[in-house]
Length: 305
Image (cartoon, rainbow, N blue to C red):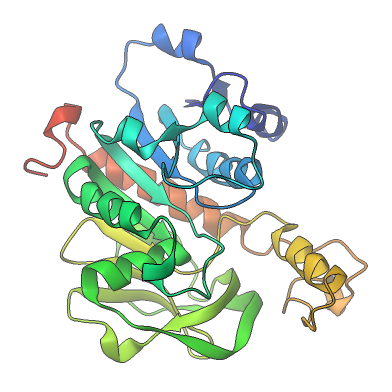
């Protein structure tokens, strides 16, 4: 089954060229089924690239999914035109009365700022609390995960001596969980962050599912609320880390090439994607678990589920 995205969204051409089934609103209206309602709060500067990365994974499910693109209300984008945002995005204020089966909160380029100094932090607090009453299950990613762990659990983050940058081998360490069904024991996962979570600050309501002894916690599940926290970037495409590296080099920064990305460490060669299958597995598992457990009647989400 296809994913329904906003009509005329540029990502459609990319997704269709990759074999992802895309449905427009008029065709979806003729379907006599209840599609899953998934929201994507996109906090990244390059909205188009990020929405394509997530739609690629969410749209690979055999279920019909309606994807709603959401942005914070209290922030003006410097990298995406207001016309584009008005055409394809809803503000959180515009969707706050809705219910969603699943909701994704992305990372944001504010990792070096205290949470409380982020311009839209007050709105983020409202959004995070809103997910507990209006969303069946939420996946927080990178900075979004750090923010939610800080807000819900008081987890502390700290600046690592060096930026974790590259594709790192991780290990599954948690209990059996539907989120990681089919995962290998040591998946390769893209990482790009300066901060880690202080393990001592993690309470009993959190279970680490994926870990790395060198660069820290990768993924946790919340036993107190329906939420996952993914601190790294399985959604990244082949060029995400490479483009970030090239931007740093052009800016005169002393950034080392991303670990385990380029074949034989040769930055002139196209990167190898060693994580694609696990990216699809994670989102397939997430969508499937939501489908199995969400109420059929959307209005019941948050009341007893």
